[in-house]
Image (cartoon, rainbow, N blue to C red; front, top):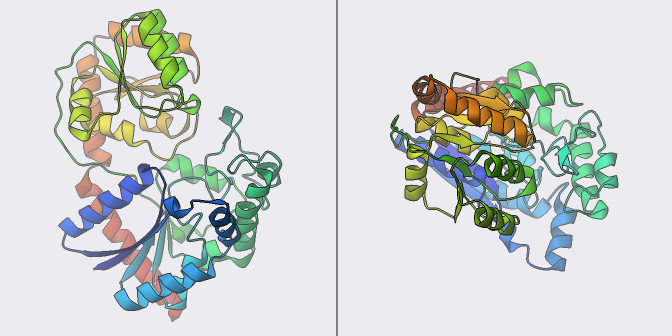
Length: 392
């Protein structure tokens, strides 16, 4: 099968960029051909670029033409679109259907319901725009790029394409990463057809596992307010258990200050993949604390693959991925005391080996490359059938 991947890359490499790269490798290893069309946010360098990009968010005629030329040249069997904002715009769907190509889109975030795509505002989850066809609250609060003016463009884009039926008529298959994400869309103003929707989680490579652990807990991620690092620091300053923090971000100074106050907290900054592997393999548990719904956190999947349980809030996608006393434990969102208590329960548990095995089993049952390939190939097959039936 010949697959075209279309993706608007982020300025800083994010989870979606990693997923696109991994899916390409997965498909090619299975004998499929993959061709790619990328747009790049890093090309937005000055005010003129920003204005041009903003005006093109609802419909970028230039990129519609470029994508159409790419598809005419490459002639794929299916087109798989990942991120299409802000540069590509929903015009890519029109380009695909002008040539009658089957179209799949993976909704990695909540961009069709929320101008910032996160359903997060003022340090907490926000669903003010979920039920609204026009995201007036998002404009009012300047949720996109912290600007009311900038927020107008994605809000208008979503309203326009909902009215035009773009999400329904120009897409054959919509991939959600989890049942949780699907449920958010189910209670929104959007009405995807039942046959359009499919759930396919992310996957990660199997790099081995170990049930022999060292005496430390692990945090991997951006050091920022929304990722819950402050909750983690407070809990570990009180618990005195060893914490290794991997990552960087705006709260790095706070993390470094905490490590000076509490020798049990150690920040090692950025780590490459081999260094991360060692951290995951040896950690007692990975601590996850995001205050956002998230799409499907790769940190959790990585941890499970290495046989390392996850301690996370009973909230969002993480709360669905982790089952207490099976592959991890849960605590109350944003509550350092609750996290501290959960760590104590974990320390006192006689079932830690069961949790290690449960973590690994979760990975093997849901998130392996083999299982993901089977799902992806079936989705492509269904998209082709759906597209052909529409033509006829």
